[in-house]
Image (cartoon, rainbow, N blue to C red):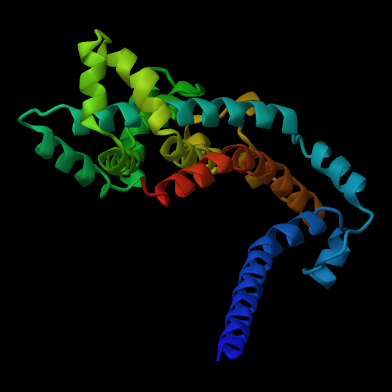
Length: 282
């Protein structure tokens, strides 16, 4: 019986590993195909859109890409400014709002939280026309600030941070710091933020990816070529009247995706640490 049970457990573990490996490969496959197509020619892609092996047209695709007024360094720089600024504003001010909703006991706390949840139901596209008219009236088009400062109001991030603080923060820590004479911002910056590292890392990834891939609002607000972001540049990679260079398009998409991988790998260890911490019992 014990021998049969051990065999069953081993087979069960093998099945779990096989399924996990299959799902991992299935998740990686689209990115791998995109990177491989970035090294292939247009004719090869038209003949067979899926290939798991690289080809020899990487530098020719790069020449075509740069010939289409595609400036990857400028696009990286512009997208990095917007995405980094928006991410910092989102995680810091959302954490600050969540801290106020959890720690302070004030009369309108629950109605204020309900209002924040109601804002989540309003699609961003509904307010885009009025937002553009407002930015145009104050001469703020072709400026990065309208794409960064609105990230301060992030209802979904506030909700996530509030739920995290409710489960991980002890009010006694805050009260002890107050007794020791620490100010509220000192408590938040030196005590609360380190506690929220896993939540901040998670939301930073989501916020950075959303801001980096944002095409709608930058396309409306930015009309100067020197201020174009990477998604705008990729969206403008159209072919001429004869054909479209699919290899250069895939190369542009690959260059757009690379920073997202870097940000994820830099912050993923904090997410793993947070999951491990949550699984431990005192």
